[in-house]
Amino acid sequence: MSSIDILMPRPMLPIVQEQLDAKFTVHRLYEAENPETLLQEVGDRIRGVAMSFAPVNKALLDKIPNAEIVSSFGVGYDHVNVDDCIAANVMVTHTPDVLTEEVADTAFGLLLMTVRELGQAETWLRSGNWENKGPFPLTGATLQGRTMGIFGLGRIGKAIARRAEAFGLDIHYHGRSRQDGVDYPYHASLKDLAHACDTLMIVAPGGVETEHSVNTEVLEALGPNGIVINIGRGSVIDEAALIEALEQGTIYGAGLDVFEHEPRVPEALLKLERVTVLPHVGSASQATRNAMGQRVVDNLTSWFETGKAVSPVPEMG
Image (cartoon, rainbow, N blue to C red; front, side, top):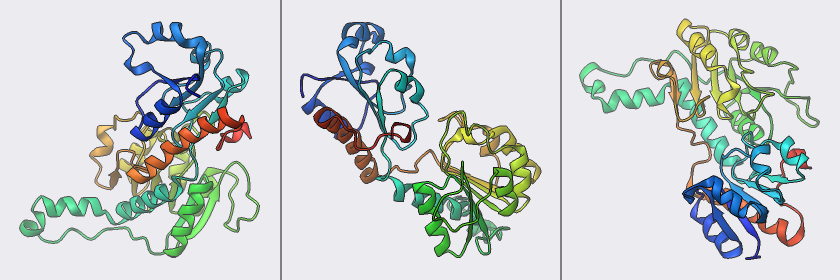
């Protein structure tokens, strides 16, 4: 398959780069002195794209008219305009399953950190306050007796739910539709879900459909004991509304692994005492990222060997 040309818009993990170099002819757009000139030179030869969070839309597809597949790194793929790819007859794949348990672990760890303010307690110790000022103040929230509402009960949402059950939490959920074979109470709207719970776990994908779904109304419905955890996409939350809700005590606290304009995080969020923040590390272990990278390679290899992808996005069936 060395005669097959692959475009790599941004650097990828060594496990990806080394295998693709061995199998295909890889054109690294990020190394080009003039990316547009490179696309003009090789665009007609490109048959596949291996990429990590680089935008793929009609503008790019027009420059690689013979592309057959976009192999995307990550379970989320809101950076890929799937409609444009469908119109251009380009397969889109992603990397589900291999990161499910890792992200669910992070989500639940973030929940524990947020409810019990464990990060703040560590800072208290490290800054010498335990010795000089005494014990860390009692936390106003507890995990005991909480009801978790999961927004996005997909693979990762279900894995989080299993962990929450083990901790004795009641589970409710909201999504596009009620799921067969799921016994958790379903709520037809996100606002109704927020009314029914005090812990909102966001696992929803990004994109136009979910943008700012968690808004002022939803946060008010969650209430003063409410805690928001976002392990999905930053765009799902109206960040300005979240900051206002936290500042005014509309909700109790928030744990965030993702943000609207990464890697920039609003200073107002960082100043709030009951906010725990992580730098988008949901799946960021070496083992899991390598497994995701391997899936990128496997999708491309399978496509060009068999005409089928290992893990197409849902829109591709």
